[in-house]
Image 1: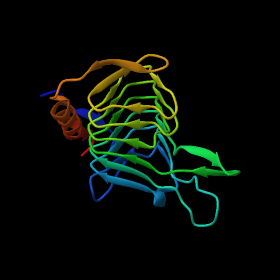
Image 2 (image 1 turned 45 degrees about the horizontal axis):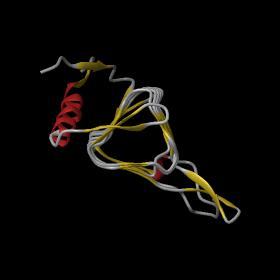
Image 3 (image 1 turned 120 degrees about the vertical axis):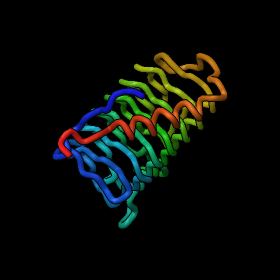
Image 4 (image 1 turned 120 degrees about the horizontal axis):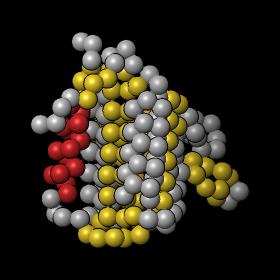
Length: 188
């Protein structure tokens, strides 16, 4: 078992469902952001739930599943486009056991379950990342790309590198659960 990852209890807010959100993260429009539980949002992360579709009361929802790890300095904002002259944001749905590395920018439409996104990645607007895919560090995924299940993408622009093993689901699930367990307050 890897050693604990300590954090200052004063820096993180823990919710009833076990989410741990850094006070140094920017959660804009929290009423439009759904966290599935046991998700960790590191300091400097920015999640934009305050962006809306045109017209009143059309908030765009960002939903994250369980055991998501959002790295330091990540920016997550919903994808947008101009359609028939109207500028609109669209919902972003992220599955369970998703790990997004530090300083990545994500504007995907959908990210499946058990997905790993490396550090310093740019995930373009309306990208769909299927279950058990992996995006290598420093990869740029162009807008509207579909990353297939069990595929490794790398490069700029991101391209298919190789198929991932069938065990990817178990590996990623174990990693995110273990990380969450190891993430302990320094001052109990």
